[in-house]
Image (cartoon, rainbow, N blue to C red; front, top):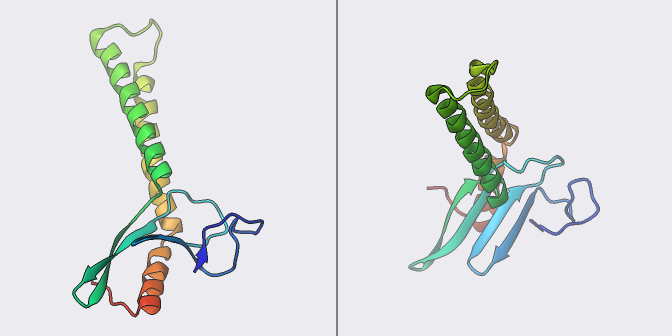
Length: 145
């Protein structure tokens, strides 16, 4: 594993190992090295937990915090925009000549775009989960539960 430290390389990080990560105390973060930007791709966030004489690894795959906050902001903006447009139509306050269908179609299209963007990002990273789990199994002689 290479540490996530910026460098002048094709992937933007120093080294050439396939997994990048950070370890701090009992917590760690792993991701697959990729040579393109995909902030919505799943990263593994885990921690080491004492379990008797053994150590258990607990964790989950999720996008980075910044990417999740950005997408939540996107969807909240679209929902508010849709509610305002629907309220204008239902109360009869829309402008003369305003296309009411487009007032609802645009935000609905933005919602579909956001969902498809997330799906496409995870599709691009479809093999990364398996690679990270394999790395954990071989590095720590672990078994997946």
